Amino acid sequence: MPIDTNRKSKPSPFNLTESPLKGFNLIDASAGTGKTFTICSLVLRLLLEKDLDIDQILVVTYTEAATEDLRNRIRQKLRLALDAVATGESEDGFLKEYLNYIQDKEEAGKRFSDALRTFDEASVFTIHSFCQRMLLEYSFESNSLFDTELVADDSFLIQEIIEDFWRRNFSPSSNLFSEYISDKLSPRVLLDFLSTFIPRPYLQFIPDLVPETECTKLSDVETGYIESYWAVCKEWGSARDEVRQHLLESGGLKRNTYRIKLIPDLLAAMDGMATGCSPSLRLFDKFSLFPRSRIISATKTNFTSQILPFYDLCENLTEIHAALLGQYDRCILALKKDLADSFRHEFD
Image 1 (cartoon, helix red, strand yellow):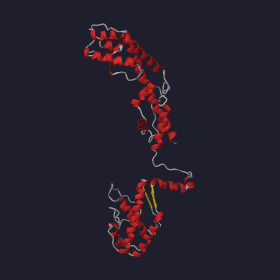
Image 2 (cartoon, one colour):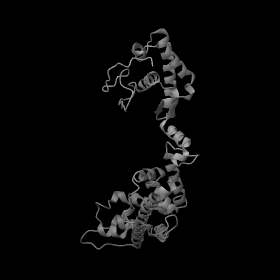
Image 3 (cartoon, one colour):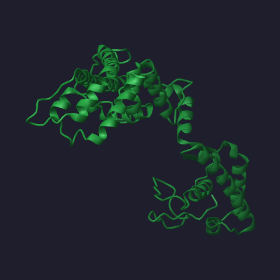
Image 4 (tube, helix red, strand yellow):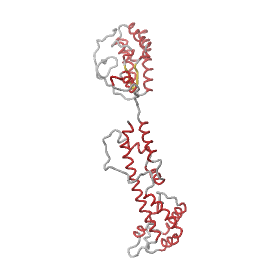
């Protein structure tokens, strides 16, 4: 081959014109430092120094866009090389130096011309497309299907699994459970949760979680909560004046908790709840001042708490509210476990 091979090998640092074309070479460089330029130049060296045809050189990169750019850059480099050996000069930094090593420029020009003429056969691929090609060409040897499809990005499959899981388990949910998960859960949250398990299939939930009831159906606790909510709304109309008088005039209430100037706002908030009377998990901020236990805790030491029937109703609603939230918490944990357990099968 018309090339002067009596050059010193300098494996480190990498020298584009002199580093040996054998073994493994790692070039570690950041963006914009000339990695693509180096690859294109190495293709020229392989054509001349290793007597390779263009279809015998494999070049792989990461994306389709990068592949197209690399093909164009290699083709352009071949044209510049062809002009360089014909004229004996070049503005390309690598070619300008490399011309000094080419002894038979006519033969070199022929090889560059042949490479350009057959460039459609050049093996420039993305990594995954090259792997797919090898699997298809050697289906028997690789024990793979003839119609094997390699997926470079499986995120859409994971998203599809999560969306299917969401539709099955959350779309038919009761109104209250839907309200609850709207603040705590979404397909995006499930994706973040699942990302922990995808690379670690050996992880297990401890303890094993099983929902106390079907989370998608109205449970006894939910029914009890709705009935208690309605009872508070219904009773408020007749209990309002009595509650107002007690909160404003009682000498036994601690006024650092039940401040006089806040009582009108407290009554107005209860008015709004009773008027709409649409069972919701979002009780207004100061509802916690109405239950019996709060009245007792806010009564001065030397006074006997005055417990109105309405306070008992609010106490009952508060207790069921806490029980329902606990049930929902356990439901969400159990459903997350179900997603983690079923993911691997669904993904396969």
